[in-house]
Image 1 (cartoon, rainbow, N blue to C red):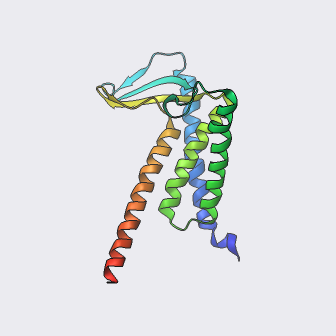
Image 2: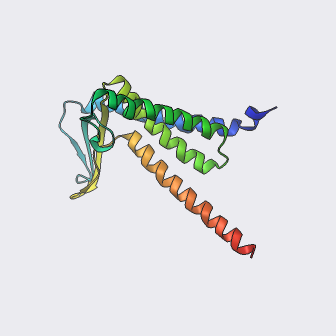
Image 3: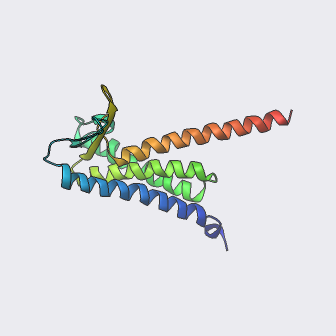
Length: 174
């Protein structure tokens, strides 16, 4: 049936993981706008989880928030969109390892969630979750950030596992 037929599993998994991550981010941001904007922070489990509405005009933890608009457009919008779309196509049509594909598509899905925010919200990204115990806390983040973080963790584990298996195989051949 051809190349596309052979890749259908990878294409479907890529699209499912991408849209699951992207849509979860979009839906939770809309809920944060509706329920949290203009309200006091909501605190749960002795402040282990704090829900508070903020809009971030930069990238990770506000990086680039004060940059010139043209630089922001290129660095925080155009280049990342090209990288995300190119990466998604690569993963759908070339990647052979499903765990690696799933991890990397999670990163891309989360990244696109924040990119769409920047595109439609004057470079502001909705953040609303803060986690921690006592003084040890995360920054304020969103589900896109969690998709990226957990995607990176899964990708690292996948790479370590693959390298471990390669080492075992290479030692057996000696």
